[in-house]
Image (cartoon, rainbow over all chains, first blue to last red; front, side):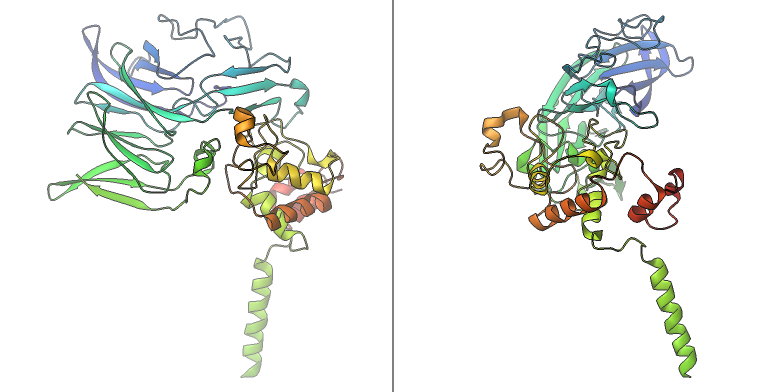
Length: 263
Length: 165
């Protein structure tokens, strides 16, 4: 399921791992794991789940591959095995088809040395039915997201692969995170809430709901010494779809605006 | 002076006519609901054969072979299907007992989802149902170029992949 596309965010940083200065690249995958590689050699360094993961029992710390990966098989059978069973039995698999993280960026803070990964929290009920497959068309069963989706920000130390803290937020995050030298981590939720968290505790320091959803990341800039934060609003189809089990959001407006705040 | 004006008017008319989609028929409003506003085609496929976009939920009904009546189609579009991916397009479904005699409290996590695009009003639900009955239901397994051009306009490039008849 999660290998349909690997459109996930990547961040780069220079860090010390095992006492050695290395340039690394991090990849918060749709699979629910954050992977860290050496940016120059591609060597696998570590991986850690940043959200609930049930599709595999874990990642092999030596190879970076799922522990249930079998190189002799063309089609892999992972823990939940929803990918190969043709028994029409419904299985719950986490994270949901959207990820975890997807194409929206995590942020690396030089302030704390941590990576802040925005995520969609939820699972899919998947029912495989290979008899539906017709050559040239995309089918073979389907999924239902049975529960309300929420969001989270996980703070991961990329040098050790350790998750330091995690903050669950009431709605999905389909935009990225922003970290500032002043100690803020900011993100927008699909219900239109812009939040500013403390980068050391992930406590919510400030939030404002603008009444129209966000699927773009906030960004920051300064003019004449004054710092601003800007964010664009308006939900694309799949971000709006993440509210499909949130009936209180049925009348959420979908205005395409840019909101600018002064710090 | 009159003839250049007339020529200009004719040219303008020809230009406007060429710009209009060639699919204007009695079902154009319902077709717009199906393809655009309600995005039914995202899961069911533009031809209603159940082959939707690769990112869609999958397992969508093949509307070309459905045996549902007009009233049943309106009910499923308005109420969705409990426990399945089919969403409810009536904005107030499950806030009272209008759908299958149950509320969201009784159905719990089996309550159909809100559509990812837009909900529809009664007139729009009736229009998309009538479009389905006229242009999709009973159309048979073979999707033709003629049918594709009805939906996307004459000469639409994506229609070249389908057989002429």
